[in-house]
Image 1: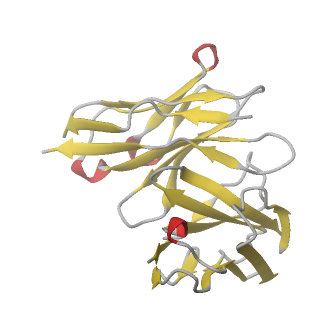
Image 2: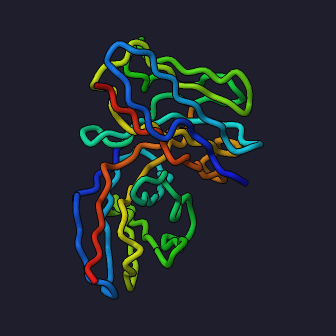
Length: 114
Length: 116
């Protein structure tokens, strides 16, 4: 069965610093991978997704993620964090056959210090 | 577009009562998903529909939970009877065609359910 691991429950960074959120997946075939962001009291919003092709994916709000098959990872990055980026971030893997399920990681809570 | 609409946003009820959560997907979307989010279990898919038909309900925790989609613009998730362990945030999401390659799931703001 597919699974996603986000090893960091909480991360704190200073505004303007770079950010990397880790995501590891377990899936037998080429995965469909997603990063979502959830602001307090809000639903989830898609940041970016990877299906195939270029392993470096650009998303909204200045985020990017890199798919590394050898490491089973899909880490999210941002060169310079803004205070408004404080939120919870979820990595997810989608099934490629027989359904449209997303399996989510447990999330990483990002705090931004001013 | 108004996005996915869920109601109520907050629900507080007592154990044993029936709870009905409502969702209006984005117009034209063919797929509708119900998720539950808790601190202990994270975000879990409960059930999803394609063209109003339930496709996979393997995530529904037990018989107390039921979901319906009587038409393309409305779905309900019902819990009867409710229990304190059902307390969670319930999200509804919809997507245009359900194909992950081309379509994104758009989430509603969620319903925060508290069962006392």
